[in-house]
Image 1 (cartoon, helix red, strand yellow):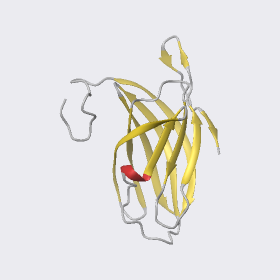
Image 2 (cartoon, rainbow, N blue to C red):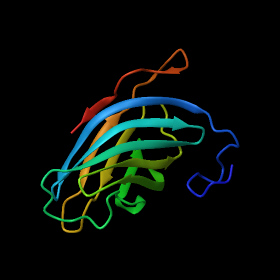
Image 3 (cartoon, helix red, strand yellow):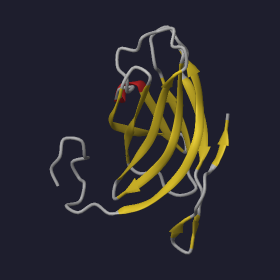
Image 4 (cartoon, one colour):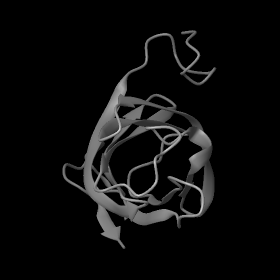
Length: 146
């Protein structure tokens, strides 16, 4: 499959491998709240879905969707490649996905950091994904630490 937003080694017919609902509030920076919605696993990559809401934004963002270079993700302390970050929205609300390669395995611990605007602190969380049961992803959200 050749698409500029997919990793070059993506299979011709990617197969979804499961979705982990998250519902994790990263916090507020510059008047913008970020929530991690889910982690969607595919063959060879994962999409971290998120939403950003203006809650009395004091800084107008240069982009409504934080670009790939604004995200840092590690999986069990090893850096994960942020392949792409895309989305849609307006000044008050946007949502999108951060494409990660490789896909984090069940039971992994993710550290996720995003910087929304210059001169504001980054937002960060640590998430432990559910493990596997009988070869299928576990339902429900993983453990979240701050």
